[in-house]
Length: 465
Image (cartoon, rainbow, N blue to C red; front, top):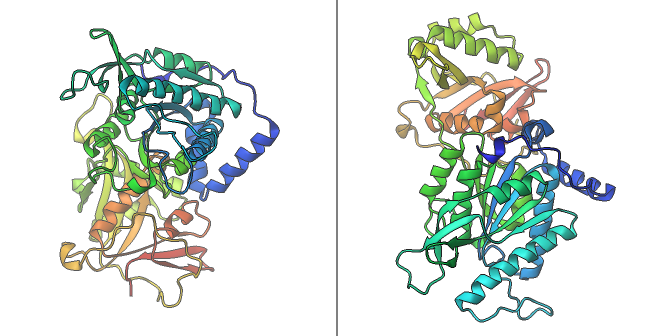
């Protein structure tokens, strides 16, 4: 049974001091910038959800950023780990040899000779050092230097090499630590009973295998700042892009695989934050242009009724269905078969978006772009030339963008938006000026105009006039 699904008892560690609580609350409020993030935090970190885990891989070059000593970077890393623990995300740390040598700093960490026995000794030393730094911050830890990974010699290495690969995982010690409220600090060391020896493991690969067993809410792979490249780039991380995609698929849509630098670790509570490269389980979004192409008319009616009720709009289901019968439209949706009923007519539509092509923008958007408009999202998709859009280059109306509450939290909204704007050069839509998703849309739009009498904000993407 995955550890995340187990109902852990109330944690036994003492409450942090009032001053620490205030500092944590202030830092958390500083990082929240939208209603969606508030809802996401309450959904994922509510006490009723148990202890959501975060497997955090600390590679050998994680603390090699220029301009700062290894000691200072390790101190900041410990602060971030303590912050995550206090706001409700439970770290499971996996590390190797962190290259903590700093010969020019007084009292720095001197590196022993680089022979294999000293390498294993250094990894164990790092394990206790990380644990001690967290303990100084009133965070209970449990150093674990053996018993988690079973390993074998890495193929192609010399017989005397201590480098190994993971062959099996026994998470009992981690299970015990989490139940006791202690952060497991796991050394990337594996034992081989057949060879009666200990192997050093790649921390990223060890964390990937551990995440498959623990099924965490976050799987975080830390890299140096200079290595912040897209996951498909060679050398961006010790784990291949294919392996990370496979991990995201195994963990499901509610989990996130994050790649980023150690200074951004405290922002991992919100996985869509700018510093991170986020990988999630792929979502199949269907595209249809006729009512008969939906799984069934009943499924469409039920989805519209459910979403329009939550959106609080004046549009009724019958009005929208009438437009779908008389106008050209493009619908985007995902769906799940009902339990025990795999036929198409029994499928439930989860998230739904409706676009009406060739729908002119109702207002002239000249000189209406707010000077304080938030920036576009961190990875914008530039509109493709109209000749590459299959004839959908005219202005289109995004008439409905109905994403379920879980969908806002697990990245479905972003995936739907990316899919829609890949098909349309220019889009416009409107929503109430008090709508909770307005900040999300402002950060992704090219401009907006507010109609005060209507109490609505009209937004556009691309050129609409």
